[in-house]
Image (cartoon, rainbow, N blue to C red; front, top):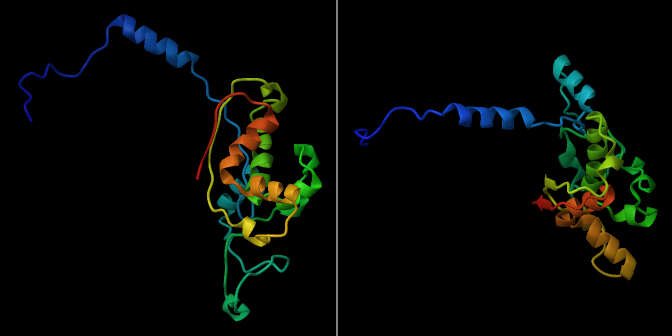
Length: 189
């Protein structure tokens, strides 16, 4: 590496420093948090799990369906299960019909709940975002809920609900539509 022309570290003049300082003082960060983790339905419960050193892994809950070909393989199986009940999703609150909610991937249900709670946690009234140029960017993975439904025999409306309720690429759009946002929305699978 030729360092013969190196003048030392770059320096900024006073005007450049003032511009950077102004930009940094105007930058804001909105911090709001909500989550669903094993043994924790919100950030406070998650913190308690961490502080107490709880082991959130346990055997299959009795109320969960098992899709094992051989139930004997379940012997000793442990995992981190969410403790929230997905069947208690308030579809009406989010403007989703009961029929559509049947086909709605649990990831979309949880996303709607957690984003609403995050905004409230940040002291932002979610309704004040309506009509704003606010973007939605999210990462989402694992599309398998639609496997619980038949591949044929669904009515046109049910097929539409099943498709949109399970298309992970539409998840950011669902959130953006619910909040009334006009910015870009991107879901990365």
